[in-house]
Length: 217
Image 1 (cartoon, rainbow, N blue to C red):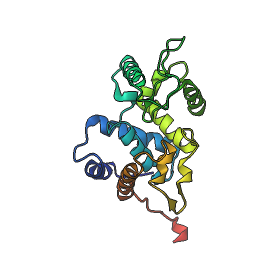
Image 2: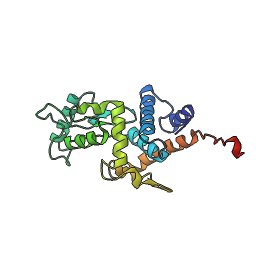
Image 3: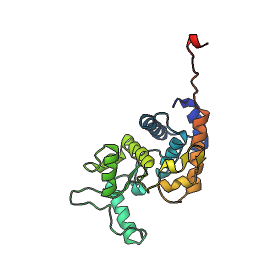
Image 4: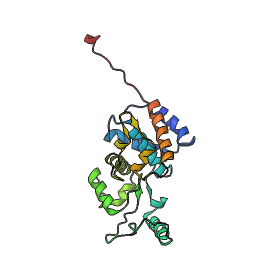
């Protein structure tokens, strides 16, 4: 997917980033785009746009991998989650998955999308070929987080719904695509991010002219 990088970022600087694009946001966005081009060369730009929208939302606009609760360290995240659990603010949680296990590992949420629970780290290890069970903290590396984001959304690993369910041929459902990650939570907002990223990708697209052999002219 050839695109005019300067034109793309000039567009999203206004439509997504509020007029100011910080270095970490720029770097993270480039990492996701590069990862997409490597994993899905010539892939549907709508898929890439919705991946970028998801990363933007899930990382609180930082475009950098984050821990659950946006904590600066695993230890801080564990304290925050324990506090929320004790206060009854995590009613859907039966077992505190973030607490250190017998191996001293925490399976708290990390990445561009929050990968939680050991079983999900195991599944994503198999899908990406990256050993996240041995070192779950690797989900905080930008390139690893990108692989999780891309492969997970394509395969439908997070909720059973995949990008192909919402973007295929002429069909597209920018709001409904939120079900790939988290039901309908903030679906319209994230859909609007996706549309903005897609507009920027389309505007910045470079169309390569087809050169015919001299004999065909």
